[in-house]
Image (cartoon, rainbow, N blue to C red; front, side, top):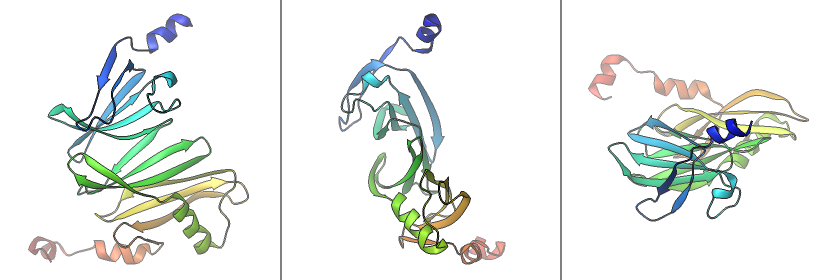
Length: 206
């Protein structure tokens, strides 16, 4: 078992710093993974619990990296558990689905300032649950409760899924959120009408 555990941990150390000197790490890396999205490389690096420099429990760092130049990078987010980055089509916005705790998940909205630089706009988790309680007339689940961004439906709108249990059982409750109007909605019919165009009209830019 000790041998297997040793093999799981990468022995190489690595040094990371973004162009604004957000962080300066030189620690053993447990694992890392990269994905490509909207012209960026999203790199997630996991360190041992003892490796975080500012937060003793932070283990996962999410970076945005220029695909052609890995030295150009920005630290986007640091947390203890899994996090998913969901970009808008035009990359002006992104959400983080943050698995903050085993029994809950939160959604964090970021706006692009320039290039790799994004700023946190708001944590919409409580707002989403408030909208659910007002719309459904039911209380928020009290035990396990999760809200996540399923996808962007256009440049300004995301589809959200809420689910959980404890008092109220939710398997999959859906709603929309518009980042421009800052409003929630369950009117999928109205949203869908805006998405349907005649092809010739779309070509003409109507």
